[in-house]
Length: 468
Ligand SMILES: CC(C)[C@H](C(=O)O)[C@@H](O)C(=O)O
Ligand code: SF4
Image (cartoon, rainbow, N blue to C red; front, side, top):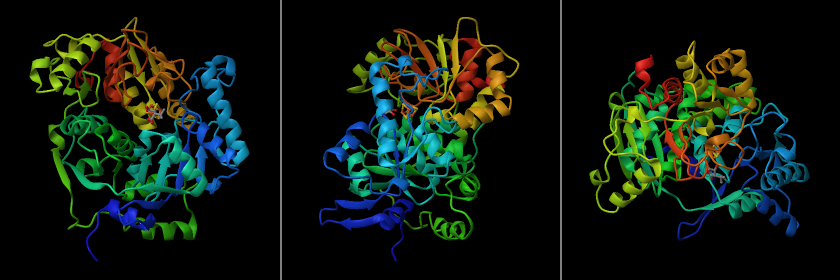
């Protein structure tokens, strides 16, 4: 048998049909659904009198539109559009008999946090969702694609997806990380190297000692942003860390089924002599605490650097950099660590898990946010929130002057009441810093939870190592 990558193995195990031109039909193991990209898909089923093919493999949760303050069950606390989308999901979940976590359920949260937490996401699966950050689930060694609304309808109706196979790319992070450096710094550094188009046409497998050393939370942070590097999906081969995370979760296999699953999961790695279409290697020791300065996730620099000048770039990038600098209100040559911020947002499917809150709380413990800074922590799910309360993290945040919110996408994107005002500058743990992403005219700097906590204390972008 010819050697295979992990991606090849999962692909082959789910291939139902392949046409001569490579167009393929893949079986889908899990379909995650949220309120933004599903209403038309369910409407399409209704119009043609179809049902959901595998309701037991279909899981829905509202996350993008929901307010993160008490009273959010009341539609009066949402915009009309938001209330319509959430009500549609409530109705569709009920009518089509799929698994559902409404806002009133403690298990509700961001779809990419809920799936793994409930044990829906397992190694070797194909996982899709009408959401680009479905890549997150690749951290389990699952092939996880974002899909569009017409594809959501196709998967609902058939439990299959039409795809063309991507190429194989390997990103290896060797060695150990330095203190203060986290999974977020790794993935920002990778995107800085490859650019936002570097992964286009590829599925990326992340490997190497620094990746193996990460918790599942950290691995999810890495795969979450595979899409920001242009990749179709990100993958990390499952290992003992993965199995330990999965075991005992509500929907994980049990008993003999667990044993059978493990037999398959243990085959999920790239063969030594597998062929790669592209390889990138980065030394873990060389990665610094990293922030973005511009309006693309590839606009990254170590926190010790200064704001670049447009003339540092070449070709078409010169104008793009100038536009970014103008939008961000930054002057070339200013040390990044002198850039004052207004707001701190800790949360999102990139960094809203328990380990992220622990990392931020470790920096904030016994300290206060700077006066005048608006700071909020938005746990990624109701269960993350409950655990953080139990561990005393919520008290640390509240004593530091942070707002302690209910679960949702929140200020990651401006689809709910948590938004930046024009010109406001935010230290954010999310994954996109596009113009207007967090509110019209808002300015976003992406960074790790520990770095965002440090920024809250000083009121400026800050090297977390100064506070450790
Ligand atoms: C709203 C949704 C379709 C979108 C996505 O696909 O990623 C959102 O989650 C985002 O992060 O921009
Ligand atoms: S938290 Fe942000 S990135 Fe994640 S699904 Fe929600 S809006 Fe998209």
